[in-house]
Length: 168
Image (cartoon, rainbow, N blue to C red; front, top):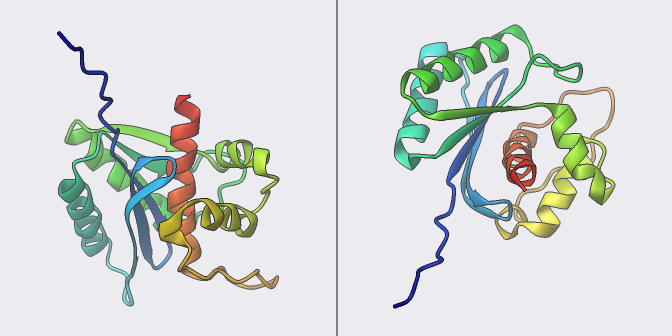
């Protein structure tokens, strides 16, 4: 008699809302991105954005949904993005899906082992280690200025990677 020791992957959906939409990453492990996408909504509509995020969650049936903790010192989310995070969290709870909040501090702590301190450096670490992200180009930011939209995909993936590292 053989005993199966196969471990089922824990599918997570990490959603990163920002002012003009949201990005998400579907992951089975810290280095396996199943799908990532950016929704840049030209004329922001809270209801439409909620429907899109709900469709992503329903399509992928995750074990857990990851959102940014907006109560930490380093969170720079505006009121619209914070409201979207609260709305997604409420919907996830109503649908009895596990929910975890990851703070920027958590992300910095995890990526500190690779000497990555800011979003650009974290994106470079992710590109070196995750095949699916190598085609994305995130230019080194010129301050002051707004962050490029592509940054949201790296932020969603970094929250997912942080989740997996915090589970160890």
